[in-house]
Image (cartoon, rainbow, N blue to C red; front, side):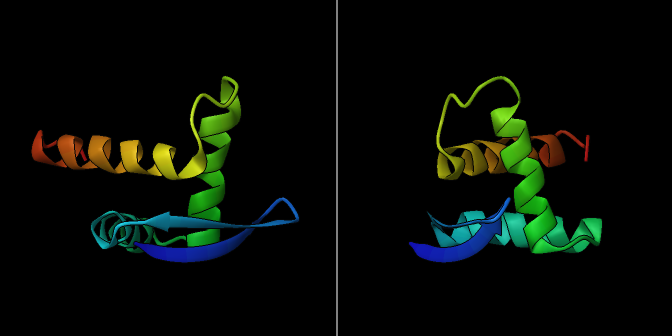
Length: 76
């Protein structure tokens, strides 16, 4: 597990994920040309949109799996 810290809306938080998930996230940040902080904020906003059903780390893992599946299907 690798832990990264970030400030989300003025609150410090950290997220621990396996390196493989961070690699998918880092590639997405680089491809989109945004910042790591804005990427995590956007994913957190998605997570909170319908009321949080999972924690941020779990949401990021699911996002990564969906991203890889979309890439394999040629949708990204």
